[in-house]
Length: 375
Ligand SMILES: NC(=O)C1=CN([C@@H]2O[C@H](COP(=O)(O)OP(=O)(O)OC[C@H]3O[C@@H](n4cnc5c(N)ncnc54)[C@H](O)[C@@H]3O)[C@@H](O)[C@H]2O)C=CC1
Ligand SMILES: O=C(O)C(=O)Cc1ccc(O)cc1
Image (cartoon, rainbow, N blue to C red):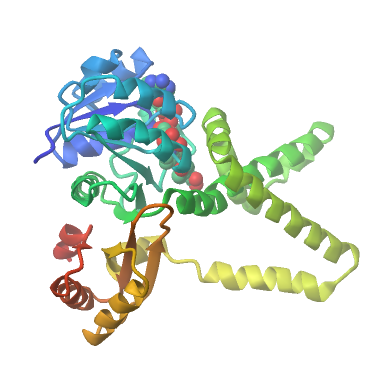
């Protein structure tokens, strides 16, 4: 089953960048759909898409893949409209939204129609927006998270992963939607709120005296870069990740009160610890460019919901002489099967472990087979 035609709904920064990759690197026929005729015209003339449509039905007719790349607040409504249309059997629908809980639930609308929905989030972007900023290299070496439901066919997950890997050069990983929203809430949504709050605060002082902005140098500019992002997009993201963001802000406010109290009481030890701890942790952040594609080799194991299964898998891996560098259980809610992600630092160890697990009857799924073959 090969992908021949893709329809990208929302030809902006992310939709345009993906369209370029699907067209140029994966060789697909790419149709675009957008409410903005000028975006479609621009995309057509710049060769980002083959054809632009303002009619949804004509854009998705005969598509093997539909990518939804509109603001997250708009995605559920667009999914409902899409589910009413005749889609090709075996068609995969995915999205690129920055939150995954709400969208994955809305994706259930496709399950009764024989269409596979798999939520997605490329973890790279920019504070710019619109198709003019589209870049086929935007996602290279970044993580690209997919959040399949426990019942989603692994075959379809694998097909989509391979295609996206080819089209973007990103590293595909699978994650539970709620886990994704908490993690991305902490590393992306909260920082955007903090950056905007800092700019708003200093902006208020600057109204009284313009030296505030005039003296704003390196640190302030670096820290607040993302405050230049699209306001409507970030409004939608916070509303769509409400529970996680509210909880993260509770923690943030508590931490700010703690450092405020330490300063007020001249608690020098506490203040020093605050900065020392941050420095130690910051120094340990993985180096994106060097790290991802060279050092991690992972596979996913389909797990029957029996007690002791994780122990059995770990024992088999150990018996094969392989060192697990990480093990992650994709959180399993009401479903009967779970998925275990096993990470190795060494390709041969990964291969030995996969063989051993398959011989013992486990269904093991490798997203990165092609990527690793290249090395
Ligand atoms: N900007 C970033 O850095 C990243 C954004 N994302 C996600 O990607 C999605 C798109 O974001 P961007 O490309 O940055 O936004 P954008 O503003 O550049 O593009 C959005 C496009 O969707 C179109 N659109 C809006 N409503 C529509 C509708 N109902 N039907 C058809 N088209 C519609 C707009 O006309 C525009 O062309 C969002 O869900 C965002 O959360 C994900 C990763 C990074
Ligand atoms: O440019 C930056 O720092 C970003 O934060 C880009 C970005 C924005 C939204 C996402 O969901 C993922 C990445």
